[in-house]
Amino acid sequence: MRTVELVCSAPLEEAVRAAWARLAAAGLPSLARNIHPTNRPHLTLAAVDEFPPGVEERLADVCAAALPVPALLDRVEVLDGSAPLVWLVRPVPELVALHATVWDVLAGAPGQRPWHLPGRWIPHLSLALRFRDADRRLARALAGPDRPGGQFVAARSYDGEARTVSPLVPA
Image: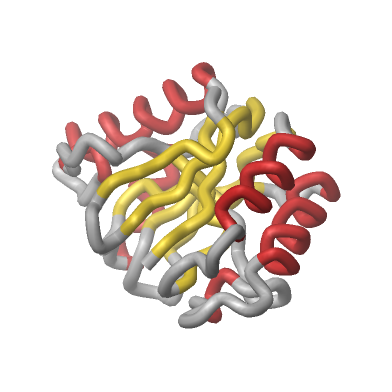
């Protein structure tokens, strides 16, 4: 699997990591416990099985032209009732436009993940991967008392097979 992800500005990344730490300190699931070197707050725009030839360069150009993009956080939610705990990201026009353009570039890519497609995509920053909806109230109190803002300032791609990231647009 290959992804297209946006990376947070330093203040926004610090705010998300602080939320991860508060959740972990309370004994709740949290991405603070994920020690893999690629683990950092990010917004996934797209995921496909593989990039067709030449697509990575086109994605880099598209992202470079669009960044930075405002990042405005909204409420903390549990997606699908019992899955990821996320901080929703407001779909500002610049973000929606970049998302659509990325998918235009990936139109012929195999294995498109449907939950990232335009019309189905819920922009968010993940706080925990497996979360019980019953703990949502406590998680909201711990993770999201404030709604920090910032920018998405860089883009990267995660390679699920190699478990590595490569920059599309460096910070």
